[in-house]
Image (cartoon, rainbow, N blue to C red; front, side, top):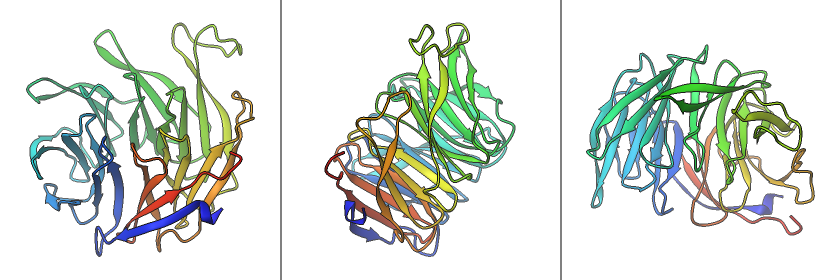
Length: 327
């Protein structure tokens, strides 16, 4: 399995600091990283007063949003070969833990240690307005992610749950709560179709949730017109410590995890397994991918198998994943 994931190179992106998160631009040509040194690499732009926890590219690739422990979110605009901060979003009462763009590029979501999720609307003049503050979680919200093609938002929290939100009559509402994890849910990732959602947790498991529409053939009960989400697979026994991040490759379907045991793992769905009860095989396991906790993994959106990772050791590493024969 080790030969399935080959190291291409390492970059000391954040010397003497943790590297928290990575994000590829839509074209797959730029990689942004952020860390405890208050800097966003590769270009070395500064704008926050504390740790930058997450970064996210807009769908067009011209804007980068960064979430910081200083309770703000900065919007950076690309100007030729440089980036400048054009807007700072304020309002959260505590550390902003994650930021994500909707596929349309017209909505931005942020979440915070203040237990809230905010939805921001972006107009043609690049003005940002908070259109909803969601207080569905009872604890620190760790991560937000949008459905790949719909305006459906998911959040993960210290309260061990996953929440889903949609717009209803000019406001945003929580339309589902996914329960099953036994500890903090750290990260989420939709599959390419958006019909399934993967979650990873401090309980050292990965859960796969599937969406069932009203009137589904499987007989899964739904409430009114809202879909129902059901856990159809749990990956357990593979990780020895907290799983901090999960990434579902939109090109190959491979599922990668970043773990506190310094390792990276890649899983593939078994082709002959039941879609309603899928099974996944561990196809790559790098035991010492980094010298400290691995915080994030990110698949390149254009080049199949190109994976980036970052760690508490301050490094960004690049890997080439080759799907084993027979899968």
